Image (tube, rainbow, N blue to C red):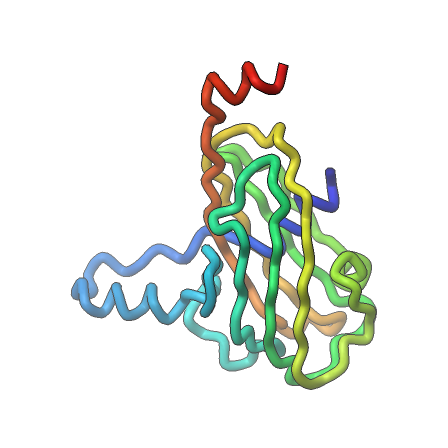
Length: 179
């Protein structure tokens, strides 16, 4: 279950920076679009300043999108690693259920990346992953927000992703069908 939660958090991260209320609507919409990660997913970059990021994400597709409790989530992602990522890289991970913080931890990136069949060092160049994650049907309905801020062993910024995922309530009929 810890792997599912961590991988789901890494794959579907949340909580974009609040937009400046003094900007015009057109500027705000442009900024939100700039933060969106290409593909069929709820992922956004944490902020617009990504010039020094070590990873450029080209596309992420989730199926189903949005993720659903009790289903298999298929994640397909591609991008470019600008410099080799060594052992000791880490992820600052935060997961919230509504306003309640469920997870606030630092995880070893190289340990977690093994769950998507990769190993450290992560070499410079193009990279693609495909992973299936079985989501437990017992995920409580509600809004989950995730932020994954990733750094090298030398504290250089790799990337920061955020996402919001809403898991719906099961219908009464489907609950009775499970009994």
